[in-house]
Length: 88
Image (cartoon, rainbow, N blue to C red; front, side, top):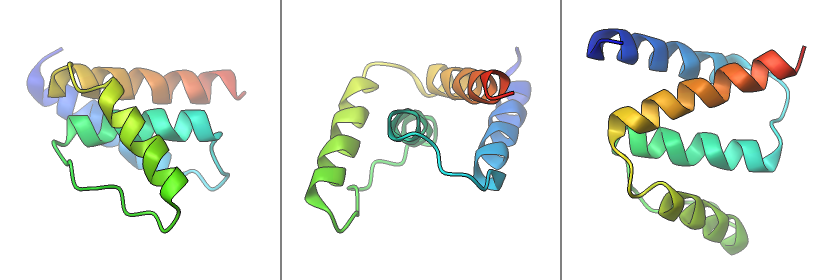
């Protein structure tokens, strides 16, 4: 997949997640969070009011620290596609 196509598919996956009205399971949401942050090179501190949520988010970020931005995009796309595929 070309870099342009990867970016288009990533953007579509993000839009799909953002348009979803029902809550995601916590473990799925943390994966989406970590791969999205890595894919967009956005490492601002987690800003939840709950320290435990910040701890979970920080842990999720540690788990993806050794992959590239493109790998994070591909994994994010795969996670989103699998989530919606298996929800049917």
